[in-house]
Image: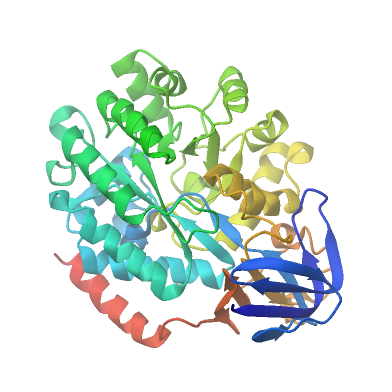
Length: 451
């Protein structure tokens, strides 16, 4: 049995149902699970002196595109909105291979870990030449190297330009090919037990790149296999017009007609819902991955988070793809979400602490991971530590619950722990040689973009 004792913490922000904050307390993790929280000294294999630290639950990223890490900050797409942005970048993404997937995943998830994120959901849907297993193999290999909790997807597209969709022919597949690969991916990678480090969802990309048949068949298959469903929805007005023109329905009604609602479904973005659709989402438990930075960069709109929270729609936080962010920093996302909604909704906006709970317990609910998202006995040992004696926090740490939203953290956290294992120590990744991976990544980016 492996064990870790985090002792003498200045404060433990639990994000539990009572919003408890414990001062001068410790936390024991045994075999990946929290077994004790309190002030009594505990024996353990390893220990961290947290006497100057605030301890937070690990952040949960509910939507990402890690492959985009190697196509970010490209000048030709900086002023584009979603459809033109996608058409341009597909010409780069069609050249993806396993090496690019591995290194971009390592880079993106490494940044996530260094900024307090312990669980990453990735929506991968670009499979040039129909190569599914090698690319997902590469993603899980990178996750294991880093020690992050990985929730991957077998994404999919079957509508190319010739079918009225956006992607090129080389990155789409037939419905039969997708369903076969989807079943294989779940059987190979999905471990449904609590505290699992590896899980898989089925995730057709979007209504403008996936057909009605693909959505319907994916829902049937996912429910027969006991896995969750994910897609992009209501991200832009262009998408709404596309769905209305092609199917004669608003995007949410289109999804509902295909049985794509329920507590096993969550949508990325979810900006352009009307009042009745939000009520229906709350009734069905259908969730949303809120991606504020991406939504701002692509001029997509502002997600109706205050209304969703009031109605009880499950909401998690997400960085979205690195090419529309352009990074993998969920702490930054948390603060920008706070500021965005203060600007847009004033007194109705979620507080800094509300946003922290969205990024932790909210994300756990959206992903169906009840064992994650808070620091309580019996929950997963996923957390991060921030030292209070930082120059940028002098006078800023009076409200430790709201601080990450109202003030934010500049740079890396001090420690990140996943499943009871230290994966970031003193702001550096433990599982890899960062300098070596930086060199490899820079060389690979250059080769990839010049193909």
